[in-house]
Length: 204
Length: 139
Image 1 (tube, chains in turn red, green):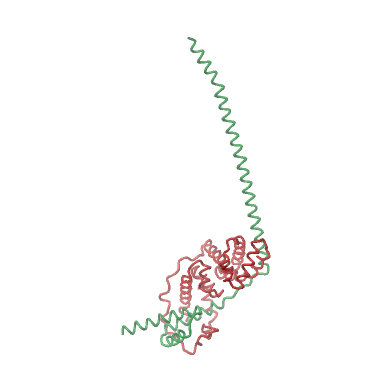
Image 2 (cartoon, each protein chain N blue to C red; image 1 turned 90 degrees about the vertical axis):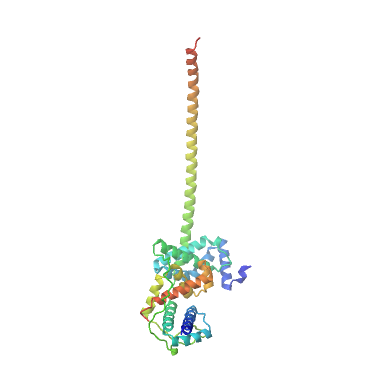
């Protein structure tokens, strides 16, 4: 009943999962091939170490295979898989004492008092294709600062940011992945943006 | 003056929310036009917009990593390894249970033997005591 609500891609995944449950390992290989890059990328952005990311990603697929009987076909397979991957990455960070639980103060002082100005000609109005200003180009240093600040975010904020910006997931989907309501995921996302903006204080 | 300040703060708050929605990629044209107008008058919000734009652009630069060619093979090997480990653990558990049964049975056997020995010893001793009693009380 619920599978009819899934996209074509989702139905294809559900079929592959059924075949896996029936003992067809080739179906699982197909799923691994389909999602390996996504899982590795998300895990890498969470742990910031390629070797660890590879190990955790393998572990993610093994856990997924072992837990296929618990997979609920109402949930998109991708979201379920990324949930396992994200949790595995967070567990790994905590085991190594690198997890970040306590969010820093939500930035009340997020906005600087500097006098930078924005000219109207600097941005194009958002159109259907792009809703983010296109003409703002950033230096490699600025990008590096943001990426470094991403690694310093609390685990949950980082997970939301990575899933939203790397995977293009909506806050509803992220809520499913992280097991929280959509609005919580959105709040975490906005706090993450605020903290990342704070990292640019003094630069722009 | 207070009304003006409150109105100005309210506009900044609206702008802040609009900037957050812009970062989410979910701002409508009307709010975008409001934001454009507001940042032309408010340098603080302009700075925030600049920073947010830089953050979003930097995050958009994140690329997917490509899995190594042998990743699928590694996962499938890992599955076989995990299955063997599970099987090994099951066998170990089975062996442990068998050992426990043998040890238990042996313990029970020893206990029974000791009990029987004690009973036999007690029964063997009783007639002597009776005899002794009989000897002491001839009258």
